[in-house]
Length: 160
Image 1: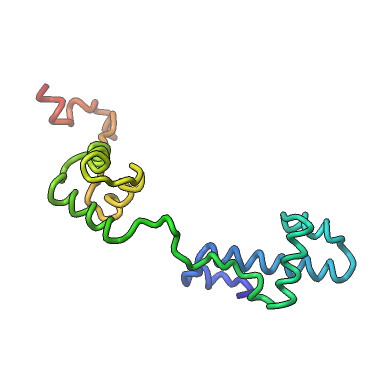
Image 2: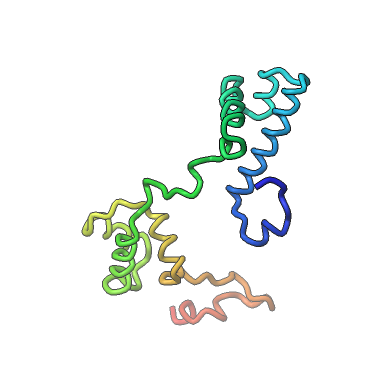
């Protein structure tokens, strides 16, 4: 994974993988400088943003397993806090068939109270926006480009 190429980024190389690659390159560079005697272990750790002890751990893992020892083993694993897909689908079905047209705030309140959902407002709003179920309120500019006041162009305000 070494050797960042701009085309890899465009082809879908994920940010986390790219950052991991950069950390590995930097570690190898600092390790070679430490091996050459240019840096102390404390200085090497500081350059990498870690303690001397952590630098020793990384060095030992690199010597034992090579590049594989430096890989972040958390990448590619699902979060333990991830909401199950069935529960998301149930929430979306509730909105489509029972609460369609409700704003997100009221829908969220009813999910918490009546359906024992425990997710946050922002998560629910993000899910509804992602599937284009809920678009939010329409916003109208205060003035039109030609300078006309909004009362002349907004039918709701004209009726009042």
